[in-house]
Amino acid sequence: MDFDLTAEQRDRFSGLVDAVRKQLGSPLREHPEGHFDREEWRTAASLGLTGLCLPAEYGGGGLGALDTALALQAFGRGCPDTGLVFGVAAHLLACATAVRDFADDLVRDELLTGMASGELVGANAITEDEAGSDASGLRTVAVRDGYDYVLDGEKSFASNAPVSDILVTYAVTDPAAGFLGITGFVVPRTLPGIEISTPLAKMGLAGCPAGRVRFTQCRVPARYRLGVEGQGQAVFQHSMRWERTCLFALYVGLMEEQLSRCVAHVRTRRQFGRPLGDFQAISHRIAVMSQRLESARLLLYRACWLMDQGRVDQTAVSLAKVAVSEAAIANGLDAIQIFGGSGYLVPTGIEQQLRDAVPSTLFSGTTEIHREIIAKEAGL
Image (cartoon, rainbow, N blue to C red):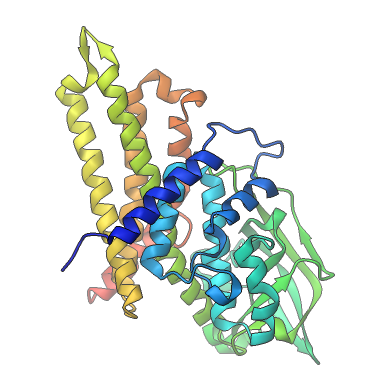
């Protein structure tokens, strides 16, 4: 059992952290529309981040789950705009993997090169007002009509949607078949019958725009179907395994940077004539933050390693997802306490780290859903 990274992995990680800091590391960058712009997206793409796990033949990095996670960890550590990191990860893991593994060859040739290069931005549109954790309760329908499917329905929360070029979405094609009656599609945004809202106002991850998507008699050529009809639930679960396993590495990177800043702060900040770090109440808080970070990191790396071995382990994925997301929130609260009043102020960026961490227990399956998975896999 080897817990060490290879020299190549360590070099790639440190080089990527440096490159991200140099090109995307300006603190508190102002977004005219409150979210990332295409220039920032193209910068991330130039570092290979939009195509990490896509095939090399399409311009991707051809990486496995662990190396993809390490790259997103480096991205999360070096970039202060966690919303941009999240948007890239959602594009890659929830959208591009579905196209990579389930689209037909012509559609793969049409879309994957652009997705890898960052020319095309993908949005994942599955959540509905009455179908969040219950993905089987979709109301959006797709009716076959000749060479097309006609989509009708509304999605309530689609990350990247306001700036997207393609939408990966899911609809009911056979209402009587339950979860076997859902089909996945990759839908070019330029098709008639698609309406996307302005970005939703959110507590955190402001750099990633999210919006509502309405399909009204939207005719989608059948070639854009993902997999066979009725395979949508399997397509979704496959892409979610990638997202739940790799995306949360960005929070490991965020926590690394956060902990580093906290340690530097308590070494230099003095109260009562002593550095803050001399006080046990502070030093122990730092120790607990380190414990959470390392525990979460090991669970995430293990889940990625199992995936690279071709082993589907739902418990490992759910344990990692819960551990990372809860650690990110708890460490965010501790960081604010360590920085005191300055941590509550926007210019330090500490309060933003907490706000960006809060939704991590909601997306990609709530903490409650993942604890249900863990309990069921344990035999309950």
